[in-house]
Image 1: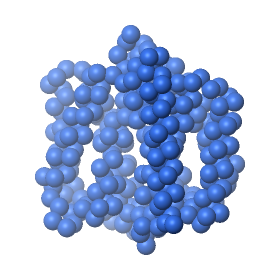
Image 2: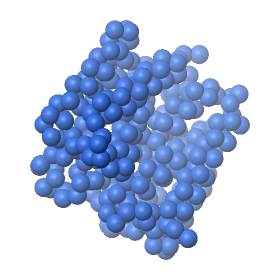
Image 3: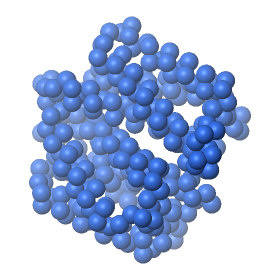
Length: 283
């Protein structure tokens, strides 16, 4: 049985748990709020893993679909970090599980990690099990408290920070997918020399780029909150990607073209604007 099968199983379980929590608690909470919270927690997880895995090479995923270790890491990350942690967070806040819930979820995560290591489809470099435990506890406690601040949309600053993370997830997601599909990648000489791997250096560059770009997106869409200011992020995205392509930082493969990237960007920006317009509104 392939390694990828176990990653898919965990992803299906995670998404299933999230769907169950949303469906069973749809009368207690706004579905839109729970959906936004799911995206928010997934983005928090992504940024955390970018630090411990992408920068510090703490562990390795082995789904078994590529000979490149960083392509493997990227696939494992995409499967697990859009499912397990967000699902656990949703379960925590919808069922008010408290510290017993934190303990049980943390134990389950460590057990899964242990089994993956024993199966040889995941390995530690300098990472330890207790670090996973601490990471899970801190994550669940923080996002649970955060949900209390945003569920009634009474506070503007938490709302802005929430949409920063949501915007990041929406805008950034196509980059690793296009990279894995062999359509485009980002290459910057300094990063390439330090990192020495196309997948890793590409993600480090565009991840950092998007962290800055999303700040402008949230400012023009959420802070200024006028229809004409919402056009500015489209201009920033189009001009930014054109400049990166002209500088040979954005590299296309297999007949992929800049216009395709811009179309995807446009769709993602439009999706974010619609989500921001219709969610996390005061009761």
